[in-house]
Structures are given as C-alpha cells and as structure tokens.
Image (cartoon, rainbow, N blue to C red):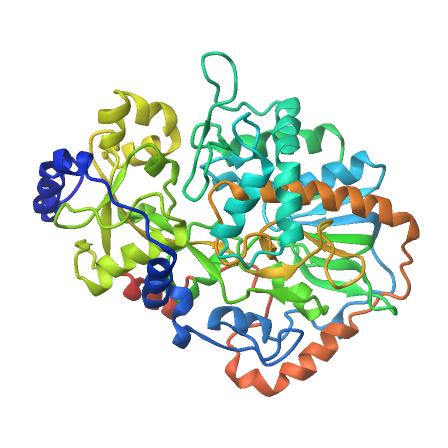
Length: 542
C-alpha cells in the first residue's frame, strides 16, 4: 500500500460500500439535467476564463485567454531576417507534424506519387497519438452501422458538429481498421479470432478496437515503420515557425527551425498539410494536461495568421480521469475503458455520484462539482483533491487478472509506485485532454486558405463541442488519409508563385498595439515551466 495514511479513512469507506454500490443503478441524465450540470460546473462555461479575439478571422469571438494570447502574440520569426526567395528545399507535399495524422497523410500522398517531406518538432511519433489508450471507433460489427456511429457522434458533440465531417468519419472508419490490420497492427482478439470491441461512453454499440491500453503506441509503431520502409524523408527536431504564402494568397510551404542549430530552412511546397496537434501544454484555466510536451498550439497559430477560418475555439475537452496520486503522474490519463469494464467513481465518503458512462463533459463536470461545490473530494497531502476510481471492481466482476491483462500499461505505471490497480483504487481528477475546436476543414481536410490542409487535433468541427472516446484515433487516420490523397492529386495544378511572409508582417503590425500585454512570441514551440511560471502552476494545484 503506497497511499499515505491520510487516505485510509476514505479507502475504508470505499471498501465498505462496494457491496451496496454493485447493486446500485444510477440513471443517466436527461438533456435538461446535462445542460444544467455543464453550465454550472464545466470549465467551458466559465465566462471569466475567456476573452474576445481582437485580430484575424475570428475577431470578436471568445476563446480561452491562453489561446487568445498566442493568437495575438507577435511572430517569433522576423520576416526581414529570412530570405524566402531562394528556398532550401522544394517538394510536392510538406507535412508538418509527426503524429498519427501527419504520418497517415504522408504515407497516402507518397503512395499517390507525390514527393513528400515530413517535418516534426520532436522525434517522429512524439505526439498525443502514442498516448492514446482506449481504441479506434468503427462500425465493423453486424449489429452496428455507420448511421448509429453518426448519430452517437452528433449527440456526443451536443448536435453542433459539422455534418459532412461526421459523415466522412463514420463512413471511412471501417476501412481504417482494415487498413491498419493489413499493415500489421495487433488488435485485441476474441477466442474465435475476431477483433475484440467495447463501447466507450456515449457509443450505443461496441465499436472501439483496441490494442490493450496501448492502442496509439501500437498504431504509431506500425505507421512509423511504414514511413521508414518507403523512404519518406523526415526532418526531426525541425518545427515549422511560419507558413509561406504566394502572390495569390495560397499556402506555398513553411519556414522550419532546426532546434539543434537554430538555423531556418525554407521549404517550398505545392501543398502543405498541418498535423501539429492540440493546445494541452498551454494549460487552459491552469488545468493539468494529459498531452505530450510539444502540444503548444503551433499549427493553430500559423494557420490563423495565414487567414484560416476556425470553429469552436472556446471548447476544450477535460478528460474525467487524470491521475492525482502519485504526484509524479499528475495529470496523466487513465483510460475510459476502465469505466467501461465496471470501475466506479466514488467520493470521499464511499458514494457514487454520476453514471460512469455519461459523456466525458458530463462526467468531468460532475467530478468538479463533487470536489469544489460539495466538498466531497479526497484531499491529498500536497493540497490537491480528487475522487476514487474503484478499479479493483474490474477483477472482482470479470475475474482475477483482467486489469493486468487489459490495462497492462496503466497497471505497469502504477506498480512502479507500489500501487496495484487490481487491488487498490486510483485517485483522479479531470485533466485537459483535447482541443475540440480548431481550424475549420472540408471533408478532404482543406482549410479556407488555398493549398493548406489541416488534419487531426489542430482541426475543429468533427467532434462538435465534446468528443466521444475512440473517435480521435479514427479521426486522425480518416482525415490524414483523405488529405494525403487529395493533396497529391492537387499538386499537378499548383503554382508556387512568389514566396512571401507578407501575412506575418501584417499580423505583427496589427498586434503591435498589444505588445505590452503579450508575454511571449508565438508559436511558443515548447512550454515554459521555469521560474515563476512553474511556481504559479504548482501553487494552483497544491
């Protein structure tokens, strides 16, 4: 037992209530109850946490202060310091980002005959993709259909999703599973050899295809090997810092920064695909995050400066189950699949307070209500607060060894701190997990800027204002493939024109009046946890 003795009374209450809780049925909320819960406790509804954007295509719209700050920040690149008239590299398709979406796009563009260059901030694969645990949603079973998947996704997104994007998602999803199988992804199997599926919260059928709780890592392993095998060039530690445009206003490539040498590389491209991920490391409303170290909203910033339309910038997903204890794992995600397999959410008194299979926005809001309004959270010695996820129920209900078998990653990480999730519950609180809003795209991944595509978490519209579990992994692959194929077909009609950073000059002039309010230039590339910022963040959560 690695939990401090201060937790013991609450742990005793949890164990004592198991018999009662196993017989307890908590009904799901109706629409009015959901809306009331969200308005009162979900962070998106805290008006004090946002402000109006003062420049660019979304001027006058509200977004979290942290996102507005980077959108209004001056460029980290001095347009006068880089000669873009003589590019260092020229390709058909430039893919910016090395996660699942970017890798899928690069593979498909290359397969269609385009010359492809991938540029990624860190190593190829360092992304939110490798951290995805739950699975890939697709209607592959006979008792399921893309129509049901479509309806579930719309309901989960609060009925504001872009319908054409949802249609593309659900119709292509079964093909994605077959494609991954053909490449060698090792999905979980049933005894008869068919793929094992489960139903995450908000899904009306078992349609999540998983690889234990390491789905994203397995998918990325296979896709990365394919890139290497096909000889696609990858520039690692080379983030894009600005897009290039031409005299027609179309995107014509990007300026990359070599993090090792601090030198710029100008890449001319007939088509550019942004796959840079989300904004987790901006720590919206100072929440902890499950995101990887490079998730600083770079693609959103660059596309916005180039004139790309955006949607739902005020909508962030807070995953209900981020780790609170041990503190070395603070904010790290534990899969929704645990709740699918019968783990229950329990407060300090040993009582359940929400149906565990409500959509993520509602479960997160209920946990925040329990901890902050009702004062029924479990306090830690470090000053944080959370509720219990009663994971031992999984083995009690489904048989000894289930936790270790299905959740090998989670089990191994906690065992390093002498906590056995098969025997002891996990202390959790919502963690910032996903950027619901972003750059608006069409079903091919095209943005409002000609020759600029965007795929994956940098985009908005697919998931509305709340994403269902297992829909992100299929999203990055559906739209990554679509963008790669469409970009390759478009390359023959592309004209580079005169390369320019004029849009960056205009942006810098517009935001010059805000210079005294802006703490940094953007894209920020990497989060700053040094000095006062680190102390402020720690104080907020302790």
